[in-house]
Structure formats: C-alpha cells, structure tokens
Amino acid sequence: MKIAIVVNGTRGDVQPMLALATGLVRNGHEIVCCAPPENEELVNRYSIPFVAFGPNYKELFKQNAQMKGGATKSPSPAEMKKETETQINLLPELLKGSDLVLGVGFVLGVHTVADILKVPYRFVVFYPVLLGTSHTDPFLNRLLFGFGKSMTNMVMKSFLNKKRSNLGLQPIKDVWADWMGDNVIVACDKELNAAREGVSFKYTQTGYMILPSQNGLPENVEKFLDSGNPPVFIGFGSNPVARPEKYNQIFSDLAKTTNQRLIVSKGWAELPENNTADVLYVDEMPFELLFPRLAAIVYHGGTGTMALAARAGIPQVAFPFMADQFENRKQIVKLGLGPNACDFKKLSAEALSLAINECVSNDKYKKNAIGISQKLKDSNGLELTLKLIEKELKE
Image 1: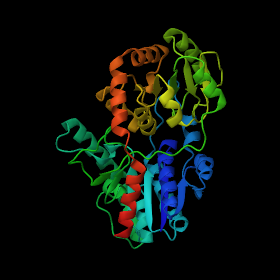
Image 2: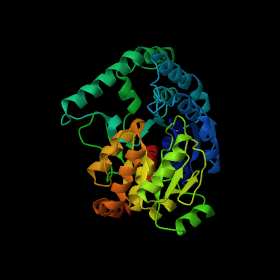
Image 3: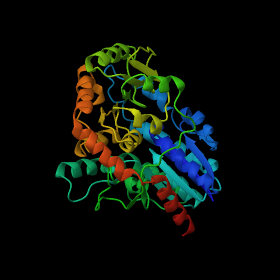
C-alpha cells in the first residue's frame, strides 16, 4: 500500500510522523512524506522519500520572534486561504496513487485532496484539545471552542465549498469536522494526557510514536555527564528567541545560583555556543539516551519532549509558547511531575532558577516521575498506530 503523510507544522509534528513512516516502510508499505523544507535533512536521514511542501517554519519563527519571546502572529484569513488553495492545487499530483492520506497540523485542504484521489483521510494529533469539548467542560471552555469553530467556518467554509464544487465534490457542512475526518488518531500517551469521552469528534488514542535514534551520545556530552553530578537540561525546541546572545549570561549565572550543571540545547533559537565548566551547549541530541542521566529538564512543553522525559523518570517543568505546550504544562502540574511555571514570553533568570531548584529539591516530583515511567514502560504508541492504520487499510 502507498501511504501519503502531509505535515504542516514544526519539527515536533514531523518527528513522530517520521517514526510512523519508518514503521510503515518496515512493514512493506510505500511512503511519501510532504513536510516543510527545513525537515528535508532529517527525513532523508531515515531514507524516507521527501517532498518539501509548505512554509519554512524555522524562518517564519525567526522573523516573528518578539523581544520577550512572545507568540508568533496567527495566520490571516488571506494566508489561511492561500495555504489551503496550495494544498488543493498541488498535492493531488504529488500524492497520486496513494491508498491513504494522513494529515498533521494546518491541513484544511488535505481532506479535499483525499476526496479528489478517492482514498481515505485520517488526521493525526499529538494532544487531545483539538477534539473539542464535552458537556462536562466549563461553560467558558465550550464557548471558546464553539467560537473558534464558528470563526473557522466563517473564514473558510464558502471558500472550501467553492473549490469542492469546481472539482465536482460534495460540499462540507463544517470545516473543523472536515479537518478532523472520520476517526482522529490521537498519538499521545493516555498516562500523560488522555482524550476524554464525549468530545466533539470520534477518535482512537494510540500513544506517542518515538523516533529511534541513529547515533549514541556525542563524546563531549558523555565526558560532561561523567564529570560531575547529573546535570539539568534546558531546551526550548522550535521556539523563536529574540536576542539569543543574552541567554549565554543568563545560563552562566543560573549554573552558579542553582549550583547545578546545565546542558543547554541550542535548538531553533541558535543560541551562541559558550561552553564553560558547568554549562555545555549542544545541537540535536538523542533524548532517550540523554534524559535518564539527568536530574531534571526545563523546556517548552512539547509533547515529544514530555513523553521522553516521562519515560526517563525525571522531574520536568514547562515554559509554554504555543499550541499543545500550554495543555502539557497543566498535565505536568496535575500529575505532580514538576512545578507550575510562567509562559515562555515571561521567561526570566529568576523564573528559571526557581523552577530548577524546585525540581531538584522536591522529592515528590522525582517519586511521581518514577511512577509515571513505570506505567509507560510497556507502552508502544508506534506499534498501536501501525496496527490501527493497517486494520483500516484492510477494511
């Protein structure tokens, strides 16, 4: 079977889908992966056919980083329509011959593409919030979700239906429902963030799909780990950072004020490398090998990083920037895996210092983290997702 994967999002969206792609290839399927251009080197590394498609989020985030690291601007209605039109116009040719289309992120045109190709469409999410609310949710939450759906329909419904009419396709009644498809695949761990019954859309929750690392830890990282007490990891993934050079001083001071050694991921912020005896700056790292050897992690709250930290059994604290990161912060606090923290745009040396000290000194976080890691020990979101997809292909 040929399976098309279309991702319109950041590295956090691409990486678990790349794990799925490798599993599908292993099981004998043919794959094409369409994703933003900055992911080409990563996807090629795993020998998965890649088509650069969609905006370069790394460059967009750089351009829109605020002075205090605030959120990037939301797409305008014109930008939403342009991106959706591009998907509908170009993807049918790129995905020709596919037996199934999987969509991730802002892919409002991809269900229509699957309808053009006359093949099933499935949407994949890494956090359950997109599934909507249930009658048990607070009134304000239901109101906000309803408003979001209404605005999406107001902007996109007539636009999409005009495109579909021109293609000889039936109109859609609701843009959000069309986006979600018939059965959303919720690829995050139930133990960390369970999808709830009674939400707006049908779903199957599988679990987080971990991309296996191709390499061990670099020699300089091994040396740093062996040279003292377990360090604390700091990394903000795809988050943009204005004036990244200022963080060198913050992290240097932080190591002194907390008396903790630090491993700092340069990430998309491209932090200047300024290694000291107590602070090591690193590039891409196999988290599944690094995290079990740490005291704690401080990060943006991304679902993938959260899943690997939980499996490592270490305390964690999130300074969220966008999307799933805010929900993941709530879950970290609710599960007792780490303290509450401010949003990323309010990040300060003091906030970091308080978070690190709380993580390493409060035994309850370590105890709860070990408990969660035991629950996740036998979980395999990749295999569950593979079984679900292959079952649907046979039906």
